[in-house]
Image 1 (tube, rainbow, N blue to C red):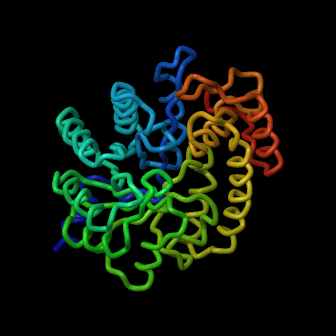
Image 2 (cartoon, helix red, strand yellow):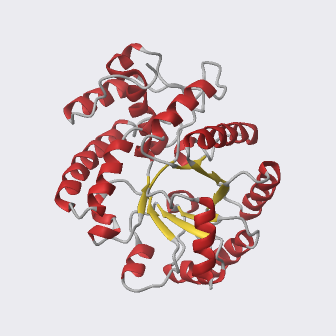
Length: 335
């Protein structure tokens, strides 16, 4: 019964089908550090060419750093633009404490009313937490009955949901509609591929690299991708997915290999930046060129939430990498 109820909820939330390419959009700031609505709307329109599923705010959108007021701003912007562009929003309730995440889900649900959205939540933070403790926290969140995506993010939570726990929650809670796994080890997806029944939970991979190999048509365990790189490389990621679905794996692998190599370089470029997180910083560096085109080095560097800006040497290295991999855009989406 859980699978049928889950399918019904997924169809209601995603009338055109659950998107296979998801993006956690960047948060853009003006020179005074305020949320930049004009730049943000332009970026969302660019993303929507390929991705109609958005996690706002995700880690890439500074979800762990935004104030409650800033979070409300970026969520409202995404919902308004999503309604206009045909995208569905998962609201990120990313908190290390499950009771705080539950508060955000309740208050945001009450504020938004009938707005078509779901929520993304993580396990509580703690390397010493047992699967039973993680399960109790997630059960309390799922009991709120809102459509929820569970977010495997051991880089922040310092723990992982086991495949057994995920399956148990899937069997008991039809409002558990999607799992994002950023661990890079893919234990839940591997268990499902080996026969674990998750009753129709949609699986998206959040770890970068080897994109084609992890998709279900190519023998992987994922239905889609939810990636920071979709902020700039939606065209390539979408093509990888479409080629895979069409049975053209070799072509998908060729694009995947080139993009994977570029992304390794971009993450290396931002390693020394003390503010923000690598996902957001690498995505922000690439987005600068997709916004301004080849003239991006002459534009003001993008601001980080902490108030600093991306260093010029980071932007220069990003430019060199994009050009070498033939992924430097000919013009920017800002016109």
